[in-house]
Structure formats: structure tokens, C-alpha cells
Amino acid sequence: MRKLKDFKGITLIALVITIIILLILAGLSISALTGSGLFAKAQESTRLSEIKEIEEAARLSYMERQIDEIDGGEKAAIEGVISDLREKGYTIKEISGGTNSVTGVKLNKSEISMGKNATEEITYEYEYASGKTVRYFAEVQGKNYEIIFNNGEIIVSTVETDLTDIGKLPEVTIASSNSEIVEAQKSEEGKITLTSKNKGGEVTITVTCAGKPVTCKVSIELFTGLDKDNTNPGEALPEGEIEIIEEDASKGIVIKDQNEREWVWVEVPKTVFTTADNLEDRTEENLNIAIKQDLMEYTEAYRGTTTVFKYQCSDEWYSGCGVEDAATYNEMYNKMINSVYSNGGFWIQRYEDGRTNLAVTTAQNYASQMSPDGIKTSSLLFGIQWDLVCKYLEVKSGLTTAEVNSDSSSWGRYSNTSNNTPSAGLERNKKMNIYDFAGNLSEFTLEKTAAPSNGWINVCRGGCYDNLSTQLSASSRGENAVNGSHLYKISGSGSTTAGGTTDTFRATFY
Image 1 (spheres, rainbow, N blue to C red):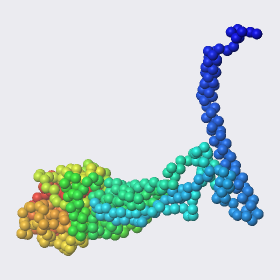
Image 2: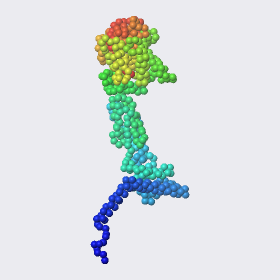
Image 3: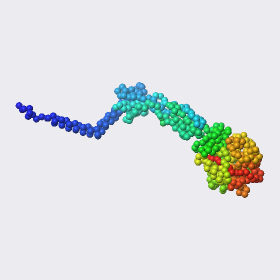
Image 4: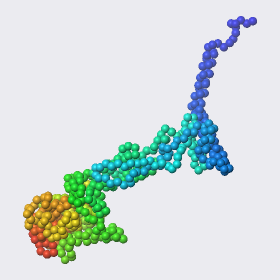
């Protein structure tokens, strides 16, 4: 028998070393497997296999139910398929309502009118699809995949759906087409607060839910007492900040621009444009001619007949009028009459703008720089605009045609009135918030005399404090030299009278 000490076996150290080596080899193998993505691929394969299994089970169930339907059984429907899947042990979740069943919102108002600097509220309600709308989700490996049923075809999506927010109501977004006029914000669920600014116009509020937009038109009325179908000063307002001095059209609308100048709205009813409105061949040239014809007919009382001096005056370019050339003059004139046609009126300065040593050229230069926003064109008044102011005062202020056309002593400043020294801005000399349109100081315009005497080609309007009101009424025209000297021709008489001062003007913008 061998002695124990002679036995050749595995020592403890050798065994430990062997185990360590085996562990290292096992770690390398696992690392190789995980590094190559085999485990992930195996998991993905299992996930897709389980989804496919549910999909096939659903399709088979539907086919069986279709056969049963043919044999007189219940109609094949997704609800029966879901019931079958659950009986087979699959976990199927269902979500009703929320983003799935909401199709949009409806507003309580589609149109609303507001004043300036006002607040109004509109409300909305969710609209839902007809019937009960349900979505189904199969749970696979703790995640949810939608079962889609479309015209008999059943598919189980392989893209996970997060059910956390799926039952919540969809987002409602609110937008204003012009937040400088009206701001719109959701104050609380189902309510929208509209806040108007100090500017008029129309704004569209768009409310969108579930991809479906609905709108509400908001009209901001800056002014009162207007027939909006005939005149709309809000559309002709300048850009930028304005202050409304008088909002009542029956008194004469007045605004103050950011340069502290005040302007009055002169209404020209859109009903006067019968020729322009009924024009068939509406080329730009034809439309301009038609608008001019309508305006001339409307103010005929203040232009007279072909035999008198005032009729023979015209809005026509001449060298020294302050406008660069005939093309620019005509462009300005056409822009002005088209603005009157579109908006039913125009803006003029509330007060005479007095300067010393004026000539028509310098007056037009000053006036051309008075645009309240730098966008609209400003200039001296054209002759037709002066006539339109006369007609406006006749229609709106209660003055008779004679008080505007023949003798303006009842409201103007002339030598035969008690207030016969130049002094601008007195209440007595105001009509429809326009000051000193009759008398005080005669005003430069862009009108031209037809047959100037000794170079007296510019037309000044309105008469002066040292004239007789019976000779030079509010509508009167006087010949005026380009350099500022002046001579007045009394309407229809052919005679002239010297005197007066033409050191003032009144601007307009369009």
C-alpha cells in the first residue's frame, strides 16, 4: 500500500487558479455577447414576435367572426376581437375620450365689435366625434402598442405609445392676426380674453384645436356716429401711436399724431361714386377718371360753371408749385383720390399752419414733411379737397351753401366782421372741429389758375381777415404769385382786389 504522502493530486492553489481562469473566460464570453448586441437583438426579436403573435391572434379572431356573421351570427367588430384576445390571456387596455375623440372647438361668437382700450370675453367648447371613440393597446414586456383596425385590416403597431397624457384634452392655441390692435389670451379653460388697443380696424382671432381652426372677426370702433358703409377713418389712420381728441363724428373726428399735430377727418360718402362703382372697364386710368368725375359732380356748387374763374382753376402741375414734376404731381393726385374712394374721406390739419415769408414752394415743402408716420404721403390740399371740405361743412355742420359759397361772415374772420384781426383758433371760427377755414389767413393749395394774370398762377383759398366775406368766402379762390405775393379774383366778376396775407397753409395726408 502506497503511503499518503506519495499521492499525486490537485492542490488547493491549483484549484483556485483554475477557477479564476474559468471566470475570466466566462467574462470575456459575456462581454463578447453583450458587446455584439446579441442580447438586445434577442430581446427585440422576442418583442416583435410577441406583437406579431397578438396581431395574428386578432386577425384569426376577426376572420372567425366574419364567418360567424355570414352564418347569421353577430356582426364582426373590433370589440369582439378585443374580447377574444383578453380571453386568451393577452393584456389589452382601452382609452376613450381625450385627444382621440375631440375633433375641435366651437366659439360662442363668430363676430364681435369692441371700443378702443376695452376688454371682452369669448368662450369655446370642445366638439367630440359622434359615438364612442375608443383606442386599444396591447401590453408587451410592460410597454403599450396600439391595435389599429382599419376597414377590416388589423395591425398592431410596433412603435410604443405613451399612455400618460393620451386621455387628456388636446391643446387649444389662440392667435390674433394683429396684436397691435387686439391681443387674445386664454384666461382659463374655455374662456378667451380680448384686449383692444388705441387703434381701430378689423382683426381675426384664430382658435385651433385638434388641427382644426375656427375664427372670430373682431372690429374695433375708435369712432362713434359713423356710417361705416360710407366712411371709414380707421382704415386711413397712420401707423404708430395716435391720440383720439374727439371720437364723435357728429362733432368732427380729431386725432393727434406722435408729432403733436392734430388732424380732422373729412367725410366723403361712398354713395357719391356712382360712375366709379359702375365702371365696367376698370383699368387704373379709367378708374381715376371716373373717381375724379364723381368728385367734381359732388362739389359742383363750389366749382361753378364753365363761365366763371373758379371753374377754370384745376389740379394741374406747374413749375414752382413745390412738386418736382408733372408725373409726381399726377401720382400724388391719383393716390389721394383713390384713398378718398376707398376710405370715404381724408385727413386735413385742424389748424392753419402759419409761417413767415411763405411761398407755395416752401409751403409744399413743409407740408410734404408732415406725414404722421413717414409712410403716407402728405402735401398741401388739392383744389378738389378744398371743395370737398366745403361740401362736408355744408352737409354736416348746418351751414347753408350760401354761408360757405357766398358770404361766410357768420363763422369766418373778415374785415366786415367784429373779429377782423388775425387770430387763429377761436371757437367762433370753428366748424366740425376745423378752425379758420373761412377768413383769418388765406391758404396755399396745389391748385392752378387757368389764365394767370401777370404770372399769378397759384390758387390760394378761403379769404383773409382784411377781405370782405361777401367777396372772398370760404370756398373762394384767389390768384397768388409763386413767390407769395397775392391778388384775389372775385368769383364770376372778372375783377380783382389786392390785399390780404398768404402766409399759411393746411396739410393733408393719404
